[in-house]
Image (cartoon, rainbow, N blue to C red; front, side):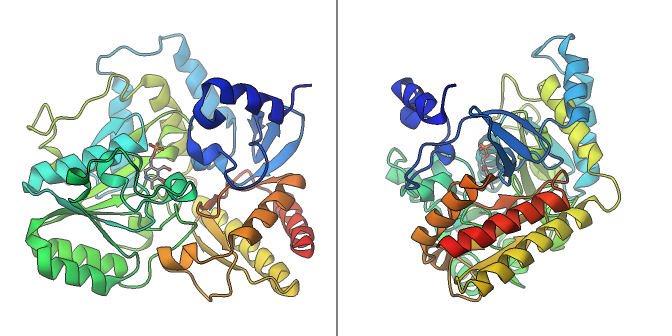
Length: 426
Ligand code: PLP
């Protein structure tokens, strides 16, 4: 039998850090990453035959569980038609219509192959539309790895200690203004000084790349208001929250309407897909209709569209998100009770189908400073003890957890039993 440790050693010879995305590395966790062989429903199976209840879900897309039979069947059905044509296909229109129906603020949409491309393109579009250069983002939010957005970023950039990546020209980064999440006064002040130079605000409406931090009352509303007052574009990065926090995304859940929305993860059903869309008058600036250039060899790939459309359609079952949220609440409540009983300072936060576990005595975590003040050593011990008991959590204290509809009451109970033991060992 080949072990994960052996595969990691082999991988590290020709792949930087042995991984093709830094979030997969077990940075600071004193063990090699687990190499998975297959996945089914709520479970991952590693190369050594161990089963894990999975709360990463391929970082979000697997909202109905791994290897969803309907998604696989849809992909199989298209496979023999060919992989990619580089021409328009009818299935791209089906996808666009579905997105516009599910997220009504999106009047026109362009598909991409990743979330990074979606946010990068939305920023360019906002700059082209307004004729302004400055953008506003929030500390600890992650919007993919394009240059303008790797400034005080979250996710792997934060986990690996490089929220400001070398390689991003200072002359570009200076156009990115970074404010504190959940601080409406800071936003007001920034706009009162610079508002007429700001092309856009981009925000994760629920921050999921510095653990899980929902917006405080008034935060998203303030963003909407200052953008209206100053002619700036409000971009919701719903790559993570789209179709997860609610069917219509965080914008439906919190009833705040952005001008542009970025999507990824679930919209591709597990295939490499992103999308950005919004107000028609802004989207009409995109090439070839308008002058703002954006393109992609594999954008709108028919196999990826088939997977995404099938998954999105499955979510339209009445009560899907209520039941997902219920599972998250059961998990979070159970974790809190067990941590309290073991006198471990711990806090959970959640929004729809995403959740976070913070090792802290704080009563809530609202921003980057509070998220990074949590106890990294407690997280490391908890993560390791859970993994050893067959529960796969994100290998970083700065990532949200994801629930799927495939997680049963038994899976959640297994997780809570494992947590009870983990807390007793800490
Ligand atoms: N935006 C958010 C909120 C994300 O969480 C991510 C990835 O995790 C991205 C953008 C980038 O997406 P991708 O990794 O598909 O490029």
